[in-house]
Length: 215
Image 1 (spheres, rainbow, N blue to C red):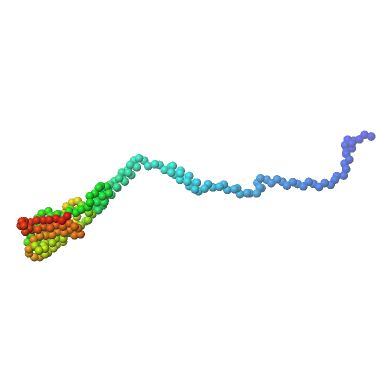
Image 2 (cartoon, helix red, strand yellow; image 1 turned 120 degrees about the vertical axis):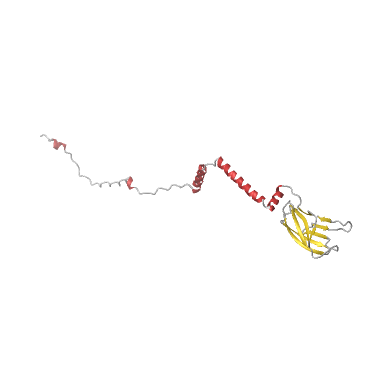
């Protein structure tokens, strides 16, 4: 008896064992599902370094002054110094100090002398004289004039103020009012200084006027 193909191909298979199905492996997380992590901040450059580099760049960008501008600035400074020096030189005390600083100066002194002959003018006596101060720095002097008799008694006094001009003689004609008769001489004193003048109208020996000066 012949077998059919289906029957001959059958295989006897034993009962199937119960096997637990393998657990599904956890799916790998997609790249999109990874937890977000804050990126580490990059260190900022120090301010001092940035400031110094910026300052350096600014300095390099600053253009240097042109020769024409430097020449103009120098000329303006020289003109200002010249104007200031001229103004200071016009002040007598400042001029004296400057001269003493840059030149060799003599010892300060004051000249007092008669420029003419004293004379009578009615009830007054006129005394022409001059004062010349050299480097004293004094702006004003005071003269005291006294008329005297033969015995030395005062017969009239007067005080005269003289504005000094350094190195230049200042002429003065002083007027002294007589308070009595018998004037034989006139005496001039520089107040606060040793200089003085003495003029005698008539001397006993010769009968002619005479004058003496005390330096």
